[in-house]
Image 1 (cartoon, rainbow, N blue to C red):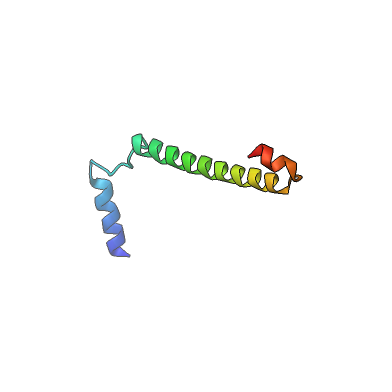
Image 2 (image 1 turned 90 degrees about the horizontal axis):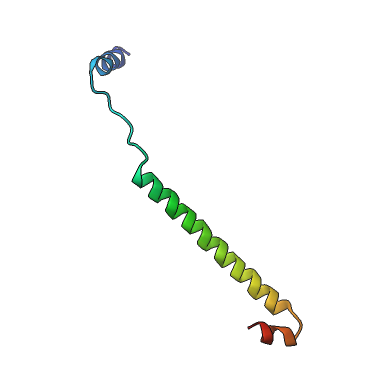
Length: 66
């Protein structure tokens, strides 16, 4: 307990406290990649739905849709 109090006092006594990194380019890139990943997954899901719909269509229609 005493060590924790000393560590806290020493930390508060310093002039240059550690600051969290700004969420500049890295954060923007992370958001961009996550958004792209979700868009790719949505595109794949849409293609699967279209293929299932074509497969369930009447006999003449799938040939026309392909």
